[in-house]
Image (cartoon, rainbow, N blue to C red; front, side, top):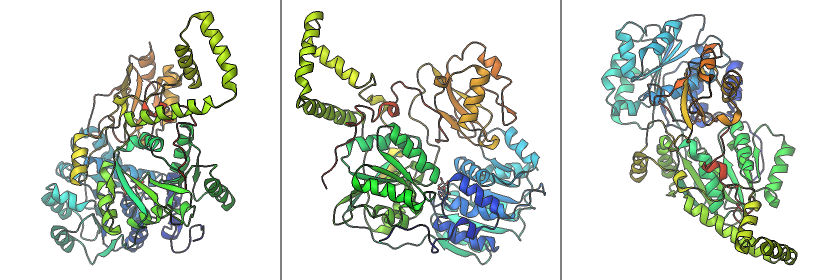
Length: 596
Ligand code: AMP
């Protein structure tokens, strides 16, 4: 096998899309190449065909229908030109966010999510401004239709996303009612993870001569690779990986993520935690890539964080583990990824991180590879701590063999005698020093908990479908504040921290988690805020809009507090798992090399 760059068998986004602004936006979000469903669905959609796409969350289906739609929107016309129906408000928001990010370089293009359980004001304001693309749940779309606030007679594209879920949730009549309000000339894309007869019937009735696309696959996986998966909320993935690396003996590890930017980000986070990690992605020139691969081969590097494209053909015997940090888009990619370990007749380990929403993709992977992937638990604080203590003891044993012990023994004895301090306390004090005052043990209350429902889903093999909410409580002395600006206003952790720090007199360490949603953000800030800060911030704007800072009152229409990972700002120290994990004795926090 050879190390290779992307080749002709894999089309690029520029091959598929003629609008360079979309290609640029995809580069901005860090997509390197189209996923299989994108490569298959985009051309027929651009040719104007109706399509039936068999694809589940995680395959990249959203971009598969969003990009062709965006290619055809005329922003000079204010009317609604595309409607996407989704079963849940979480999905509607996620799809709207995806549209907005792909439309980054299409000025004036408005995407408006409409979903139940939320106030009408924001949604109405969005619709009044002229929503080129409406993404909504069926119930709320009908609501707006009936109130005369949404006109679907002008649409040229309709998407039924997760159609099987919509029918399962009892939206069949609503969907048909909405379809009746749309022009017969529209193009329809129906996406569904499964094809029960009800979906077939719906397709027969409302789609014209549809092209069927699905992620085909039939590949065999290496038999000498043990495959395990773990269920982890999206925002705890880093913590889970860090714990895993601490307790699992390993040599070289390849960690797969979806985007170029994620390779850089994760590699940096791992380095902060004391690992030797490097990113490889399609942006590296061949020489840089080779250097990284050689470092992994010779053991000076333990972790490569890679995209699928960058890892194509990578052949390093020393790779003991492949970690699918982001679930791959399709089983083939999975098979290819895990084939990076278990080479040269050795055994290997493949770990698959699955978030509750991606549960179904796991079954597809299992079905197509024909091999079981066994569940594993995220290491607990107890397990991590046991390992840390073990390494601590090993470090003492190693150090006792040093010639310097004699020298220091004399000094310690002298100190103990002069001060009357118990020599055991002196030894303990030296250990504290060796750890630089950092907390040595994880706290069991920071263990990664799955919700009762996720746990049940895991047992039963069903998928969850709701926002992943953090189990981590807001730290003492802090509270979650809500800002009325989000991705739509192009808010970023940096712009939020900048604005709040400048105008509210807050310091870097005053910021906890920052989570940016579609039309609002949640920020952990000191509780109470410093004197005068609230007043000063009442005039603060981000992206031209007032931030309307207020204490978050928990879930609202748009997904509630906590939630999906969005982006995170810097975190304060103080007992959170990711502050300490891997930072015991930095070197010894890593597991010993496994003998090859
Ligand atoms: P979806 O199946 O549409 O829910 O997408 C799953 C995830 O894959 C989302 O986080 C997308 O941002 C991401 N994604 C979609 N297409 C690509 C791509 N071509 N390359 C990398 N990531 C992608």
